[in-house]
Amino acid sequence: MSQEDLDFTNSSSCFLPEKYKQEQTDTLPPPVTWYEAESGYPELKGSFFIRGFIPRQWKPEVDEMMRLKYHINSQSSQIKSGTLFSGYRREDRLPVFIKQMRTRFIPFTIVRQEEDQVGSLVPLEVAVRMKLNQGTTTWTPRVLDWYDIGLKTYIIIERPKDSIRLLTYIRETLCIAFEHERKCKHIFRQLLDTALEMEAKGIFHRDITSANVVVLDTKEIKVQLRNFGKAKVFEPGQMFKGPLGSVESSSPESFRRQPYSPSAATVWQLGVVLYSMMFNRRPLITKETISSSRKVPIRRNASPECRNILRRCLEKDLKDRISLGDLKTHPWLLE
Image 1 (tube, rainbow, N blue to C red):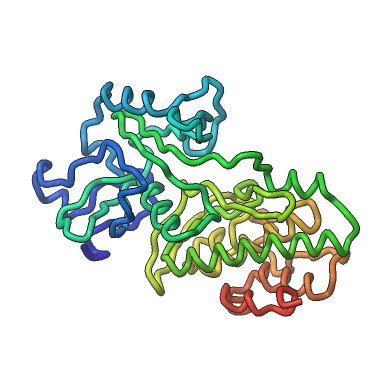
Image 2 (spheres, rainbow, N blue to C red):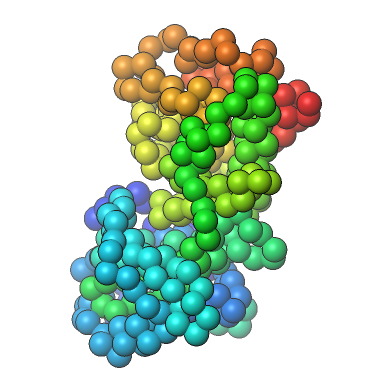
């Protein structure tokens, strides 16, 4: 299936690609009711919404299947893409998150196994996470199952034990300046490695913020990136246009509705996270400050090398912003 077969649009009114509109409804890949991680990762191309095209009816048998396998706690929290419940897998009491979303508002993609010429509809977030979890990667939580029960879709995600939000950890462990910077550098290296691996696999997270990073091991300071609800699939050289996941971490070119590469936007977001860790506050980023010619001010309570990497990540001019690959060899990270 080629890129042209699928509609790469950010519009919330997006529906099935033109090719499928011209065919009969019964020629569409059938919606998958559930999909387990052990099945392996299929081919992934493009994304689209199914609003108003495929009738959505409640599927009690699928809902029962999910509740027999997972216990869902009554308490929940609202997230940008829906509602998040905690719970556990009944057979081994493995802690999980249950992400509940309205089916009509989430993007789907067509996935195919090697010899599957038709494929099946799968939520884009599930497909992205499956691709990221190939091999021994541990920097993002595993997807265990997903369930389409009609009007709602549930994604079951492994819940890390004893995790803590990144900025909460930073605030609770503030120490002398040298040790603090060393700790931030260790975390930044992990996030950079994560970003480089995502780029290699053609995944654009779009919402790398301090709120989407958790610390799993406070002794060895291991971090994990979460929330792939806004992720996109891309190919080398592909450009994007429009807003990123969160306003506070949006790059200047996304504010200006100018084309940008996933790599350049990711570098900017990594710079915002590093700034937030180092100075316990986000840089002041608004439409007004972004549109001005002034550079993002960098506070002085950091080493010269750290200030340099921050300036190069938070460079408003795309031509002067450091590349994702060059970040790896920056002197601050080689110390």
